[in-house]
Image (cartoon, rainbow, N blue to C red):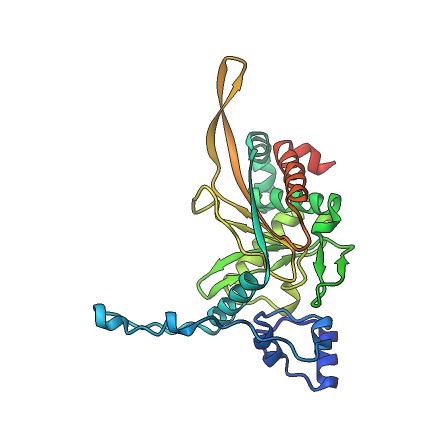
Length: 292
């Protein structure tokens, strides 16, 4: 039961209906269970695929060793396989000039040390994404299980993908649109630390409007993150790169941040995604906009 994320009211209703939440999570191929999932008459199992592709005697080709997949890894694999097979996903790629944001962030180092809070660029990304989600309500929504109803949310919760030794975990910054940079930065540090120590509770996860998956501290020039249902989109971030911009005939170096937005094409079309990214790029390019 510890691997299943569900609100107390959902657990109470499941108990009244005699529904095994662990079994339901396995049938749905994900760990987060919402109230509407309990109304399904017969939830479809996650597609298993053709197992013949994996039934290979690898030892016939050379030395091998076996390592069992952790329980968390198995659940994550089922979730990703289900998401990738059920969602018609498209990824929109863009870049944001990030020089002004980085200069502003560095100017706050003394205040950061005084407050004892590490102000990373991720805090700015959370703040900007929360602002963009308020401007584009269709991105801050979920599709009902039968695909007939769009559930628009009057809250903005941003998920943060955290790489841990046990696997990927996604704690959530609640009401990110109503919080300042320092509070967001403090919560990111706290949630990331507790994720590494496996001390996150059910209330720390689930219910995100959208998730950010940042590989900026590792590297890369772009990737295609997989949408995490019931969310409709996910934002991928990689390493800042130096590019050349031109002022007439004069070149100048600029810091550019690659951004990758994957989205559920059943709800979001390409033009919507492009407009959303234009808004996000504008906010990141001028941090004053996200703080107004």
